Length: 141
Image (cartoon, rainbow, N blue to C red; front, side, top):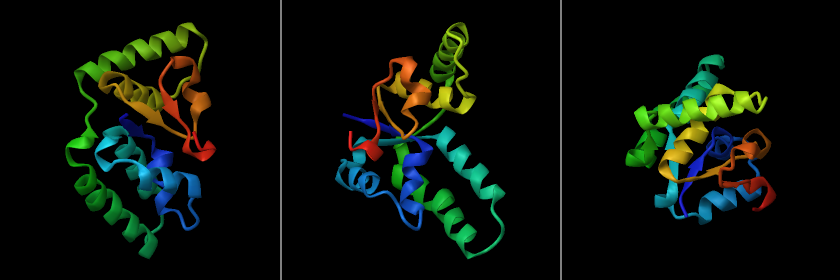
């Protein structure tokens, strides 16, 4: 099984007191089965830009700008034309169904669909009606 990590999953390990189940999932998963989206990188950069200058911000900047790209390499997935087409379909279906799916969430969902990945997230409710394979490590799924 291969996994697309949502922002809340990859960032959990950088918290001062991370969730043990999430850390266990990340430690036990085959590294080659874990993927990251440039959408997650954008969300991480947004969070970094909102932080005040200081040592913690510098540490996170290094993690985001150096460690993650090095760790994921070819497993850092782009938002390309097939993903854009899937995103359009997801957003249209979401609107027809009266859902208020956020743009970034739909972009992650589209990435998972195009690459046949299981989405690993805490926010399963946000994605539940899309029919995606999902895993919530906070619940020990």
